[in-house]
Image (cartoon, rainbow, N blue to C red; front, top):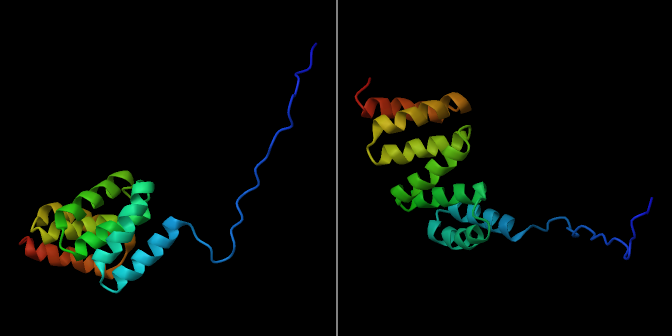
Length: 143
């Protein structure tokens, strides 16, 4: 039996060196955009988020921040579209589900909002989420 011939030695690439505190461009964009949104600067946050998402369109963290920025800018339809995609991809994401309910509420689509808000309240156990359910039930004329 003939042995396979190895003409060249295998090459192994060492892993990239990551120093403490060093983050990827996407991690930096996320952190900086989060800080901007916390300081109520959604336009500036979107300026960081959009280029990072162009490179990594499936990044859920960045997409969540983009939805938050859209909500802050009252671009409710854009926020709804982003959040609906996030919920479709991961139905157990309580934050995205609650935010989608809030986007629908802000459009006075109370019946559509209630299902998302109720699920988010049950999944998270968050009192604020439960209060959102009561508020929308009242607005929808259910209580």
